[in-house]
Length: 121
Image 1 (cartoon, rainbow, N blue to C red):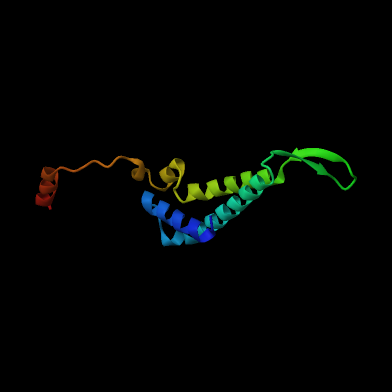
Image 2 (cartoon, rainbow, N blue to C red):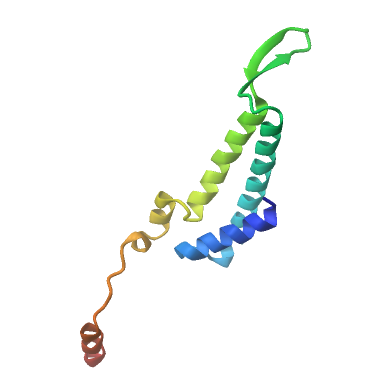
């Protein structure tokens, strides 16, 4: 997905959970960039055969098996993205840190309670 599409999606998600603030736009932009790169890396990993271990020939001519660098990069991008998701309140723990009250079920107020409240003011 393109960065602009990710940015729209992240903004919609933060609005959905009630954590959107215009001050968060730099973080949203950074996360969108990470996710675009993560998607490109995953596509490249898949196109290369999706093997977690590959053969690598070093400068001395020795061939060894190593963890696929594309897989390593994809995992690192996921971890970096998760940190931004937490900061933006897009994980349960991140949302709890921003506002504990957003996770509590909202009680419906009765019409009688609202009327009594208005009378008291």
